[in-house]
Length: 205
Image (cartoon, rainbow, N blue to C red):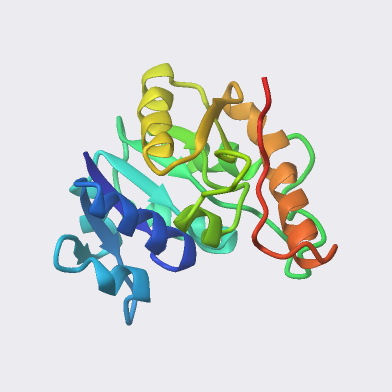
């Protein structure tokens, strides 16, 4: 699969590096010096501008601070028909809340900005360290995803599962209004409640 990563820092760098090692054709949109995970896979991955990365990819991961996402989407050009994985959390600087207004979400806003794209929310409910190694004694942690296109969700579910997560369909893209506050729970437990970053959620059926 041709995967473009826009935002190749802690989250994007690690996810892209793991997919590259799994045999996917990965391209990173890099500003300045590549992060360590990106440098580790440059022999099997490529770098380019945001526009180049988007144009050459079928699946695009957005892993940026929320205040940079709209400009990145605009720089990407025409995203019609492409799968856009939204890993963005619109948290306030103090990590105490969300910067989006009631009745919407970052995922839904991204779908408006990326006209014609198939947006799927995923990879926003654990930290980058868990994305790098999601192994727990109790079993695989859950990774919820949501979106409005069934085929796009199926492909994203495969990308989630191959990294060792329990992929769970949370419903339509409007469920971002639930998943983004759920991500805030992980953040506050990790940073404010003293549990640390080595935590995840398990979905028991």
